[in-house]
Length: 190
Length: 320
Image (cartoon, rainbow over all chains, first blue to last red):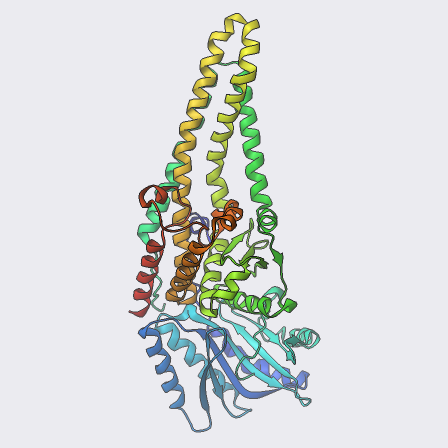
């Protein structure tokens, strides 16, 4: 934010950075090679619904668009207790590219409708043999990724998260500021 | 480039710019008059008064700017909370986490103030040390959407660096007030005693101090009104940015209605303890009703009707 924006007390909503999402498929392969975590085939997009008809129409279009695709994918829509909407897409576990393409379609539709600033994050779900969960969270506003490993009772496994950071350092732009690794408890599809 | 729905409010920005220009103008005129007076009638006592006023003014402004977070936290009796500190704290952190991710800003510290009066404020000199404080009453009364609206408003204050802007703007008023006070004291104590011994200079000393006093009073009155005006514009800006961030102007509007109507019911004894913090609060702890015309220009916050009307406009814009 520039000096003029400070003086005049205005903040422009931050536009999302969409293209970095396509780095996810190769990152998933790296993750599989280096750790026990494998993709679950589920990914979700989270956004803050704006009030009014314009947004609900776009939301409906997105849902129609995604459910129109092949039979092997499915889309679910749900709202969390914070008022954010989650679109959960499920593909076959090995079809990460198709999944990411679907997730990207959601972003593009929202952005084309002028609601890009409403996008919060995208999460790609992983799981290891012991059943531990891991989400790769993409922050639209910063264009960075971070790992989120939730455990029972709203605690997170920081050791796993640090390990993942080391593994993915070359494939993804990992969020350098640990203070921005916001937890997303109870995220649908994780 | 995709189209954007977030048009800036040019009218508001123009009015705010004009207000800040006026404050700068009054400040410059004030300095010129003082310097002119001193060079015209240079004498030790009035020069000393101005020097001490500047020194104290800088000190007070810097102190209130640098320690704004600690001062406000102590005055409000607020406690910093972590997400593990209970369901209320966890909810608050959850909402703020999401707002930070949406707005791409660093996470401020979070505090809860005791008390049933529903209110919130944000303070701190930079976004790194900023604190967002809400009262227990607010957490109890508002639903999640409304709470989010209020927090988005407070975080807009942080993003707009309102503490810094208002400190700089208030500097003029503080200076003028101090000058008046010191000139008045020197008139009471210094002027009479010393004047008797130094016959020749005496005729100059007395009127100069009086003129300084007069200038101070006038500048203080003008800057007081201008600063209040600026504060009201900053509130409208924060409402606007907050509503655009969440995309829910109506939730903020409903929170405003709840907060202000509840406050009007609370007895005055409770209200008095909250008064020193008013300038930072989400809605001032004074009844919104009463003498409309005069109370409006003295108020740090715009009237409820004005804020609701502005939010309604944003809501219409969003659904287009």
